[in-house]
Image (cartoon, rainbow, N blue to C red; front, side, top):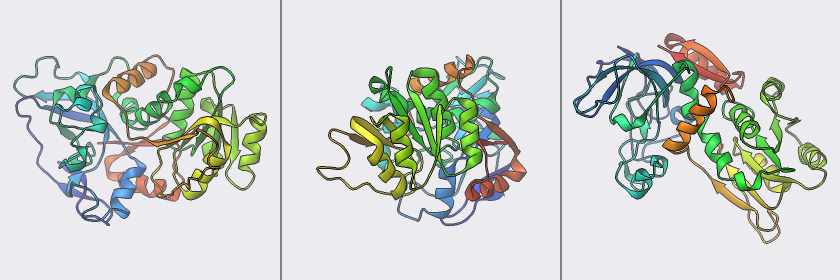
Amino acid sequence: MRALQLTEWGHTANFQEVDTPEPGAGQVLVRIGGAGACHSDLHLMHEFAEGMLPWHPPFTLGHENAGWVEATGAGVDHLEVGQPVAVYGPWGCGTCLRCRQGMENYCEHGATASVAGGGLGADGGMAPFMLVPKARHLVPLDSLAPIDAAPLTDAGLTPYHAVKRSLALLGAGSVAVVIGAGGLGHMAVQVLAACTPALVVAVDRDDDALALVREVGANHTVTSGPEAAAEIDAISQGRGADVVIDFVGADDTLTLAALVTRPLGHVTLVGLAGGSLALSFFSPHYEVSVASTYWGSLPELMEVLALAERGQIRAHVQAVPLDDALEAYASMRAGTLRGRAVIVP
């Protein structure tokens, strides 16, 4: 079968002919209905080098996946052939405390693991079929189509986890700022609107991205630039933001986050742009907590899918044939992609 693979660090992915896998004991073969194209794939192609991660090419890209059960290995008796499923992306050891709590994204052996998940060291979903090594990584779908479920496994789950860790701050009268209104940011706006009464402010430099988040629930939008902090201050009536989630992670976006977060607030870093935030006694404001997050837990993915099944959140999907996947990545790199590209084999 034809698969889009990363064959070496520092190079654009390319198509390879690979064998269709067969499931062994406890494994499941999934026929892919959609594989999300993620900005982190661009980091893998262009910014990572040998030794930066404990896993290595070659592997098939695609860590946001959903489809249908094609075949099951021995011992898998709770899934049926043809059943629609979403794939939980981070694959941990399954036995440490965090994994047993459903948080395989924070597996205690993750730093030395030979794979982080399908599309991250192991073969992912940018091919007609994907081998899932443990049936526990699959979540059955109800009415949600796999092409719509696929991006929720990361672009939905990651912002949901980031929002959920700050729910105690997002009560009546609170203000939440989302920096970066792209694939993850447009989902964060919807999660905030669905799960909290917070006033939601989205920040981006792209007018089309800001138009999209206004459509899906942002109460205010702000264009990135030197006036952004003052605009957010005015929107919050001088109080500042209770929670800022930065889906960019550059120096300037982190600086903005620190400027606009009120005392006792949260700054959550999700983006991988490589920026840093200076810490001193006076900045950020007193008792502001700064944290990074990585993906989300399996129970949280179930919650995300439940919200989507009820129509409360929805990824803005651009379906792209597998043959055109590299063009989708080029659009993403150029900043012209709206919402989330989902590759359809």
